[in-house]
Length: 288
Image 1 (cartoon, helix red, strand yellow):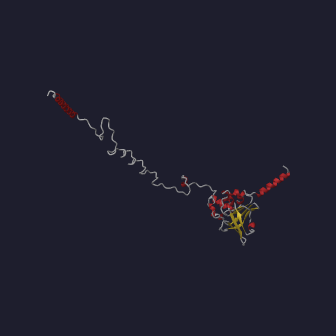
Image 2 (cartoon, rainbow, N blue to C red):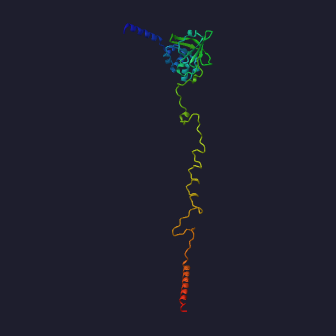
Image 3 (cartoon, rainbow, N blue to C red):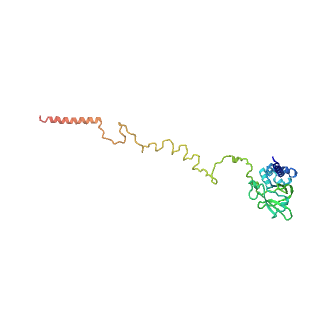
């Protein structure tokens, strides 16, 4: 490696080391900010801060952190992200704002979870020389005062102390990337898919599944298997039983029946007797 290349590499290395910072290591030198420093590590915001080239951290001492104590991890991370400004500000710069007021962009704005002005801070230099800071959400008050500068590495990292925590309105609901909650017993049971806004009709007596008298499976007089009036012949309209060939029907017309044997024999004998008498009389006529 040539002398020129070695020299440029050394300058680059010194420049990089001089600008690199570790917010956790930096705050560890101040015990009054130990709780704030622990919160940065727990929410993994410390690594995001260290990855930035230019940053300003608004820290709050331990005794003023009670408003965010016990909050869920995702909500705590959102609130602390509002205290990380994506630019370099020290006390002198804040006291010399061109218009005595400015809107600062925070790390929470870059998270994609901020709604409205939740990701911005309103900083104002009062005529008394003090600087007040608050959420840029409409109607929010500038309730935090600038206390002092804690540490600085121009123009990479600046640590400023403010009097109290800044909690933008509605930030508790900005949890779209929070861990999913365990499903409740009511939500674990499957529900039928219905068209939104349409309530399925309740079953009426006409289409209920319980059997009704009209479609019950038990036999009824209208559909019983036993013979009904239409199936059973009645004396009035039942068809007559076909007569046997050798048996005359009961209601068939009566034909002239042959005379009884006894009466027909007597009549025959009488007729023969009359004929013989006539023949005998006729045979006697010549004699006379």
